[in-house]
Length: 464
Image (cartoon, rainbow, N blue to C red; front, top):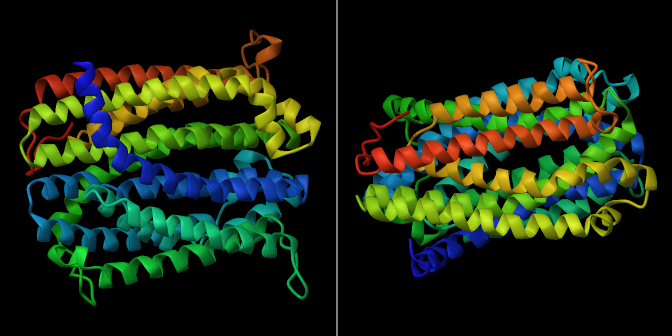
């Protein structure tokens, strides 16, 4: 692979990656705004936010992964210039999102198992219930918008999604301030106000997305200028579920391997979980760049597969991985060196900063491994390879990362060094799990590109 080839791939990836990056940063800024504003409201509400956010993210991302199965299917159809068939997939993804919303909202309205796992204090548990109750109404529009987002990414049109996400953020911040702190006759709701603000923003964002689909001429060739949904199509829904369930489980494992740390760390103390929340938010922000590169690389790979340009698909997959790892190494090093200043931007509370500081010692290795496994998994999805990655995630992130972290953090063997007891133990095991998953997924990607890269077409018969 020549230097010129790598630069050529970068020029193709960048126009698709930067709108995804900006849009995802806007989405992450929802959580950042929640964290920063609630941190200045009350420590009890911040602890509730950490637990509640972990629950919501766990539910949302698992279901989101199923909906996003529209991406590789639509990308291959778009590459094959089967536009009307590609548009029909969005109709089916909407039906899928509506069905999953019922399940997800029910889980958010009944959070007792999560609260039991967190061993939350009664005062914190009440705040978590109020927060999740509001988010139960945010979940349906959030999942429906994910179908819109995945479709647009697959057809190389991420800028409209970015614009809507930035618009949502511009509405979220003032609503947060109003509902968290209160104003006039509006009471201060604390953490629950974050959930209510998110629900309002998600519905507004979805309505705007629907208006764009109806009015923008770009969507006419896809058959999307219609007033009603196509009827559910069983073969299409079956294919989306066949791909989406392993994708959803993979994302669920990946995210809960990290977010469940907040639930377990909350058993230690409110300060420990608050420190974890700051560190987690920081690495989540860093993750947006490799996620954007992964989305763009996967889109180009799927389109090349659909067009039967298999050499280009292989080249783009490898180059996307190299670009993401290089950027991750640079960003991780800079954040580590500037960690004191970065944490100071979140809070002036020296106790919380002291709790977060040791966790960032892992940031460079964590971020590089995270970037590698993300791009590899997205490229594999473009080839409709989803089951084996799910198994790799389960073993590495749940088995080694979360399970091993529990053993180390709570010193179940009596062998844990003092420096790794508590939150640092979870982070050390999480990094180990991420490294293992990145090695496994990169090797799987190499095998797929070498052995199956020339045999995956728009029929989608290849599944692993």
